[in-house]
Image (cartoon, rainbow, N blue to C red; front, side, top):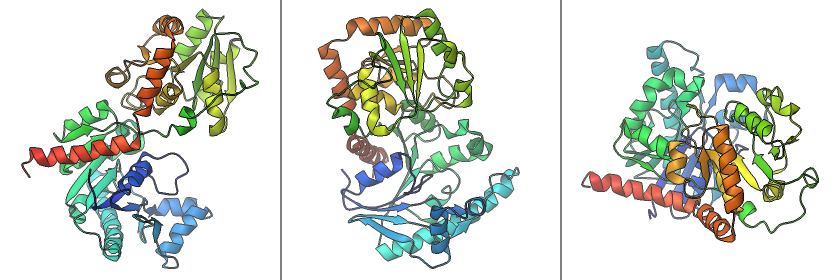
Amino acid sequence: MIRNRDIIVVGQQPWDVEIGSNCKNIALEFAKHNRVLYVNSPLDRITKWRGSKDAKIQKRIQVIEGKENGLIPLDVNLWNLYPDIMIESINWIGNQRIFEWLNKINNKRLAASITKAIRTLGFSDIILFNDNDMFRCYYLPDLLHPATSIYYSRDYMLAVDYWKKHGEKLEPKLIAKNDLCVANSTYLADYCRKYNVNSYYVGQGCELDLFMNYTGGTVPSEISNLSRPIIGYVGALLGLRLDIALLEDIAIQKPNWNIVLVGPEDEAFKASKLHTCANVHFLGPKPPESLPAYIQAFDICLNPQVISEVTIGNYPRKIDEYLAMGKPVVATSTPFMEAIFNEHTYLGKTALDYIRLIEKALAENDAASIMARKAFAASHTWENSVREIYSAIAKTYSSAGT
């Protein structure tokens, strides 16, 4: 356990982001025993121009113009900083040297804004925690002079064109220059270890109360009359991440199985043959609080992930949600899934694998298995993940003999 330290958290997602954020959860856990400054990503010029009427952009403009204070107390040990600077929009620049020169200017502006907050709060001997921001925070270990600098890898960002363009050169250097790296998957920890021997898998926290505390209720009306078994998926239906062909094969080969898909569809799913299958049911997006009722109604839960650079290192939080309700899960096999989830899920790669494993899971679902799944999911808390981060820091300095 690390206590009574000053921690600065920087990264891609601002505090006022509306989607779930690993970094915010980690900051909240840090703040239970330390003082934490959570720094929003700085406003860049193009974002200001495109979203000038957005209330969040207006808030940042007010801070930059000195009309509002950008340092906001959130809790006893937690502050949020809206940087009082604007950075240049530079990712479109093709020349690497020019990009890096302008990126250093952007970093200096951000560092200056953070330094003012450090002085106001009286922070010292800081721990710098960078949530996967390889550009805007690249030079911060050099400019802020932290006692400890940590790079947090939670997605393989180089699979995305925006980050790949300059990140293929910069991210390995950034990983190397930090004191240690921590990752939410074994795949990403192995990737970071290529450039920094002090790279550790620290797991992933999940907010599972909604699922673990579900006491049951009526089956949603859209599926109450469907015959068993019901094979289900809950989440965004994205062709980039999910194997449409695999789902089509299962639906065609097992017409007596009802496949229920809960979530918004992208164009790839809308154009798929799944819409011609009488045993496939698209229910559309649902409010988060209603999702446990759908999962409870499934006999088997699926995560038919496409294996690609985008997905292979991901921590699939939805599997923890399924397991938190004790449900049998059939998912795509990846090195990470095999390493972490193998004991509590059924893992395969092809449609034939899925069909065989679904049949096996239906036959083996008993009370002991249900309880084991729930207990396993319950261990994936932010408290445990942050404890692993603290352990990684201790290991790093122990190996260095300090």
